[in-house]
Image (cartoon, rainbow, N blue to C red; front, side, top):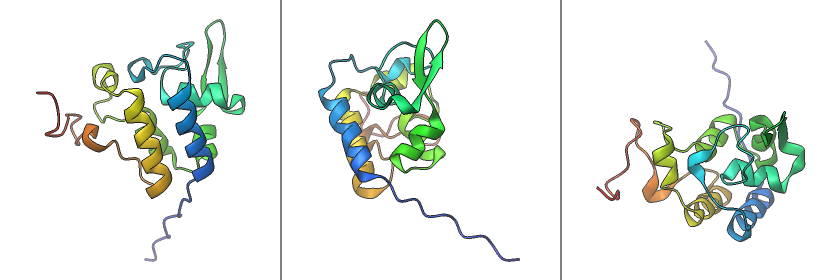
Length: 138
């Protein structure tokens, strides 16, 4: 049985770097812990992207807007799985874990993505059960 080749994804370096600069310099509070639809906040990476690029927004009646995952993935030239790992970086996906990510961590992860095509949270990368690496504060 022949296997279909896995499609190669070419990241959009210009858009990823544009988002990194926007996250780094935006006056919005940065908050990965409150990344949920209708938060009326540009606090997380997805929210900053929605503030930067109105075309990726999804309106939430009476609450504001959030981002459309497919449109964001396409804008950045990444897969939906990469978009999920970028916007919800921990496999445990708990608010407490995401709150430990600060603006500088997010900018660094975006710049790594632009350089390597890989979503890499560095020392804050979670393992398969959602726990922190040995670099944790524990």
